[in-house]
Image 1 (tube, one colour):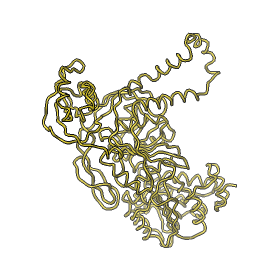
Image 2 (cartoon, helix red, strand yellow; image 1 turned 90 degrees about the vertical axis):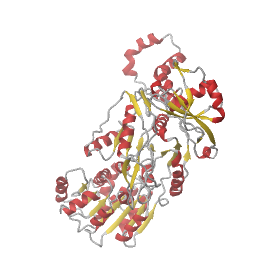
Image 3 (spheres, one colour; image 1 turned 45 degrees about the vertical axis):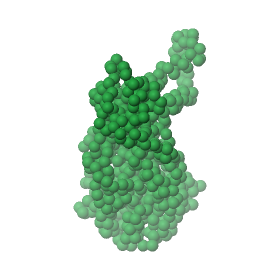
Image 4 (cartoon, helix red, strand yellow; image 1 turned 180 degrees about the vertical axis):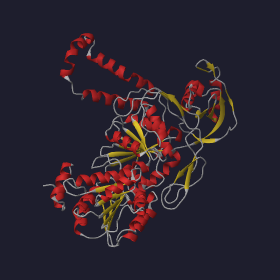
Length: 625
């Protein structure tokens, strides 16, 4: 017997969900469904994203709605069109064997006339985004005066996105005696206020602690310098060859920039953000669900409604402006009872945010080190070996070719075959990571050990035109001088020249050691520059490396030759946001909308940014509107 029958779900619906593989309810479904079927009252349900909230309210509606009537009886409001379409698809699948059942999705980016026609055909359940719903009401294309059930799904996110006025407007057109069901992953003050305004003595169900993430998500963070953020992302992807996940960025422009860079460097990736048309977004999501792309680079808003059970990793390229949004991001993985990993890439100034997240989620974050080149090569190599070991041999298909192959290879032993195979498949990848820089900045444990040193600033007549970046120049001078510890603690590489910070106590030794030095046949000139005596932390100052070996063999990332060099850092500057932003400050540059309660605008700018060269290994469908 299907356990949903025990909760009160009827035979025809049980038959439909059995075909979908639903046999045992999740904790939120087990608690919510009996309450909604037996009690005629309002409900507040708090549960982590990915725990089955859609079925928790969708299945009761299939029992309560009278599908013999043609008027709108249930209204479901959600924050994005992706989630709107997903909910509509789910409820249609639940009502597959119910005659006369009609469910209509109302969202922006599609024909409003077509949606109005669907309503006129007699839709009993409407799933809508707030903006388009207000438009439909204003045009008198939908009548919700007889709605008996109003569902607010992802209520916290709708309020974060600034839909409070729209919600107020929509709910004012519904009867006062309706039931309101509010579902949310977190319970910020704004959600509490809307619950008090539109609900009467609601029954509250909480699965897990409030604002707490799913138990089967591992939370990991890496601390790098801001300029190394992208290289750290690539290193993390390479270390996880079976990765299938989402990279979250703050802005549309950053999302497109990171996606373009990954594609250029040979990764299987594409972008999802608000500048894409609905057709483009649908195309990208179709590819992602089919696993023809492994990494989806997305903004918070665009990723709402992504309902994919097999996502292994969520990577926070930047932390969100609103701390509650982290719960929604991490909830994209570990769905349907599976496990997953949520990764945060931090720079030194953001370290305190991890402690805020730990307090909010009630979970400990694990500090990890960005893998070394050796670590990555070892992981990729054994992933390839394991893949070959588990390959099922197609005896019939290769039978006619085997005699000639065996004849050609008869002189080679098993060991020699293995060595040659690994060399052929992996040598360029090994070469790429042979002298890979350490991308780790000071983490929590090392921060306590951080010491300040007095430095002198020096001019060097080498730059980017000499095929150097910050890490390579630092490594060259320290290696050539043979002084331990390395006297250069930081480097700033420009186009034709550079500046380096040299530990004062080792300055004279370095000057003597570099007499007669050459780089690729060019004499090296070093002389004092302005700024001597500055105090800076002694820390790794690496920018990472360029090219790689590409072809997309296996999960995460053999890369095509593609250099990456830069003279500046990433964006710098502060942020300001209304409501629960992380921090305040000011900065020049690109303006950014700040979602949440209150008001404000954020900005970040300045810095040199990256420049790169290389051949693109693939193309993505990302034309803008």
